[in-house]
Length: 419
Image (cartoon, rainbow, N blue to C red):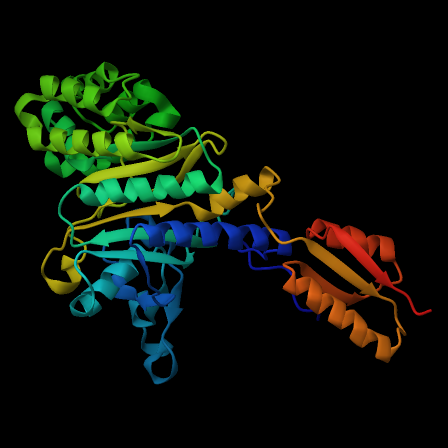
């Protein structure tokens, strides 16, 4: 029986043209983030299953590719539960591995530590446009910085990177988990219900304000609390300016919202808007939730109009490292939606700027060996002059061969015949 030539469902092969674009984007990301003082690190593809399923990864914990124990540790006949046969899992993001990494090496690292990670992650998700089961994540994180300087640096570094790749007129949507909680408390919801309420709120872009109200009512929450809650969002409708949003909330929420939280948000907006390089808008979005339960403060998301959905996001997660060390450490991170950005560039027919001229030398079969050395010397000289030179044998179907090479970016063909 023939082997299966297709990749596993939800995973993909990457052809040369896309690989060239990915390499270019990766180089822009690394160069820009390094200029902001972020240091590249690498963590293993697998983590202990207990680290990945610690009830902080939200829905992603249901999507873990689990790894069975091996050798003598694998005792299937006596296994009672899945835990008896599983010990590792493929990482579903780069944040959990980073927290373990920092906990293990904190004494060897500067403080605060600015980390850059680019690597594959795996989720047993339903594949769709821009979503795969194996995909590349690109994260920057600042560990050990308690002030909003971390948020300011992360937003500026991320948006500068997107601008240098070629994106403009996008949005960075920003909110604060403490604002979400203050709004829920003002409406009279019990703190134990916040997570389920936020899950419903997260659907606002799909079901609208009326849909959120209806779903909360169907879940059994009091009509009075629902009315107060949705009334807040109605008052903030079309309010994008962070400072304006904070003024409205301080007036309406009163003692439920700490003035320091509003000042925290205003400071971020003022610093970012005054020093940004890229063309984008920082937008206050009171409906922004971010699914991960480990977020404790500021949260943000990238919205690129061409995609019609989130192209990355992040936030503050001050309590996560404490799960490893017993002592909380300030932490904040931002992840670019690498695969979705690549998808957009590919759909736009993106060409890598400043790439070397690509020339293909097509050498006819039977070309004399003594003259072949001259071809190689000519190719060597062209490479030294900054060109990319491919030396290959000429196919019988030369036209098709040239078409394929043209698709890979080759602009010029030099033919060497056996005459």
